[in-house]
Amino acid sequence: MNLDLLKLGFATIRIVDVIDILLVATVFFYLWRLTRTTRASRMWIGLLLLLAFGMLARLLNLRALSWILESLSAVWAVAFVILFQPELRRALSDLGRTPWSRRHVDPNLPDILARACTDLSNRRWGAIMVLHRRNSVSHYIETGVTINAAISSELLVNLFAPGTPLHDGAVVIDGEYMIAARCVLPVQVSSDQPLGMRHRAAFAASQETDAVVLVVSEETGKVSIAADGTWLLFRGEASEIVMHLTQMLGTKKT
Image 1 (cartoon, rainbow, N blue to C red):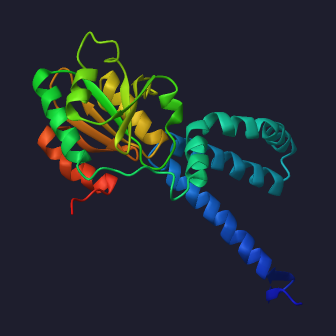
Image 2 (tube, rainbow, N blue to C red):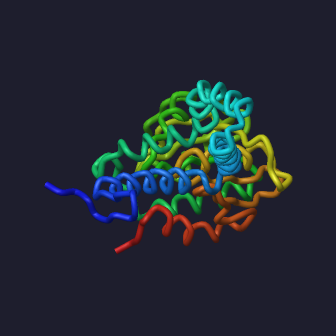
């Protein structure tokens, strides 16, 4: 069977060549989409520059530069895993998810969280809540204390009461349940804004996973929502979160 698609002089373009190009383009697009809102996007530029220098060195027969770049290529695989570890974890989790792996989300969840945030805001009690969507957040759950309790605004407020054993850290919420409390989240090292530790942790978690992360500021009582590496609501009022959560969690009352 002839698989030739097009002939241009001495070059022959086959159907498998087109499929190969499309698959590579799809992989690069998927990786770019995962990292476009993270610090890893700047690392991509550096890697692409190294690849471009390598191709240029081979074309111009720059032996010394080619030898250096080829020597570095031996450790690129390890460096790639180290540099893009959060993004790779998110990608593998995204590929491994199944349509039935997500728990049912209570349509009243945005209202429950709004009431809890309002109470926490009035009391000036700091809080951070991670709302699981599709990507796994098990690496956060493993750092905390498992509770597996049905969600309620009263229990959420009590968990974040100062001086209680579980008040420090994040609460992970999956569907209709609070899975774990006192969970440790990664902290964003650098930021363009003067953020506190809770806001840095929320933003970093939204970059690593597709979770929606709520933060109640202990200093101001303001509420923030981070998702997909961006702030949907930054230091707003608790009354504003219902609309954002309904949209992000796909909940709608019938």
